[in-house]
Length: 640
Ligand code: TSB
Ligand code: ZN
Image (tube, rainbow, N blue to C red):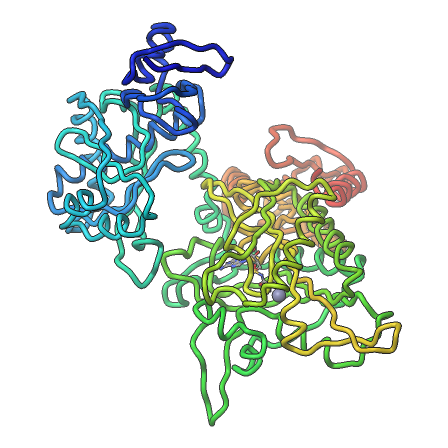
């Protein structure tokens, strides 16, 4: 007999070999039905895995988040089994559960197409209806290697497992997978699922290795939950910045221009210009000085900074002409170091904050490029702050708070704050442990002192130091970095920067790298998705559209208004196209223009404005002055 202890402290004796499912059933039949897996002494256990010794047991039911993960992980196995039946030559990479579903990386031996997904899904349903038990078996490393001897991916995974790791195989019918578990007991429990999409994925995320095909799907416990989720996905598609960017004529990505090299169209450029003015003013007020430096630099500059040895994979290849070597810059920090060095500095001059809206180029893997979200040519709202050691915390905090203000002004929401630290991967980070320890300690202390909640991410630091990254969630559901504050003791040393202290001696400043609101590219992708393309008035490319009811009778007055609005720095346009009124109104509507002004007899005769605000059905008639006042207030408040 073994002793089972429950979360409330109560205990009960069972025969050794009892399962979580039996224990749940012993408590109530309802619990048995709702149970999905269990924690046995903290380890995830399948419902049907025997418990052999005394244990603390927590039953995981459908309501728990973990249950969703278990279900989706089992759905990934079901997908692999179905693919194997349809493509007998298929081998598999990894197939985990993810936030809203699952995926499996597949080498099918031939190309799977989007149109094949329904067939695969049908096969999954067929296998599910076979009601096969999903069972676990622990094996030795030797057995595991023998079992997967013809499968190079699984063989590599097995060889990479730590020596003391228990290796387990999961079996369902003719299909067996290398897997830690847990799983859902039987294929019959996987009923409500859908395959969603197909993408390319490199084996182990390494662009030098095999390209596999990744099938994404999602599985739920009830039909209703699945339907609801599919609806959310549909709505998200409507928000996809790639779709909106095209419809609203914000940007284009054209093959002949180059992958990840976006063309900004007039509407997009206008928003960008407004944002640029906004950033310039915000930074000036906060004590930043603006500089401008070239997009091209010498190779030597990047050798000094360390980019050449740590960041070269992300850089476009070297250019050479008449014995001179150039690189297209991936970052502006080296230039800003030189700007700092261009003069003698005293402790009284610090902090010095150099800001620049920087166009830079990075060679991102082609598979990772996503609309405007991840591109190869980008313009960053960048700054480098040169500070004394006693100023570090105050300046990091002030930079962080300025970021919060900008994010608030833009109406965006932070998903979470991440503290990106180094790990021991060779070559990726500079190797002065002392500087790393110091920088990481300061960042942690600061976040703790300020009560800022954060998630630590090892291995995500910049090569020169730790970063506080502010993360947002995109409409498609992935989390990306919006803003960043980074602490750097390395570049000041490499560039031999100094200032004269109050003691008359030379001292080394510290550098804080700061990205305010990301790059225009990434920011635009986030804004489009956040606002579904309906920009608040202060950002809207066109703020008001004037539409005369009758081109002959009403044009003069409409033109007069349009001139007045433009003179007052509003972005106003007059629609004089030879089209029907209804068409023009619909057109202004599809372009999500904040104010739509229809000019007819009434407006002309009484010198009035009749407007309709985007998103409202109501037509409002006011005097010109009233209209100006309300638009001014709308712009001033940034729509808040
Ligand atoms: C902040 N040297 C620092 C700078 O001083 C730097 O470049 N940091 S960074 O590498 O983290 O990049 C800054 C920001 O640029 C990121 O936080 C992210 O918002 C944005 N960004 C990075 N890569 C891309 C890309 N490929 N496409 C669009 N935006 C990007
Ligand atoms: Zn920098």
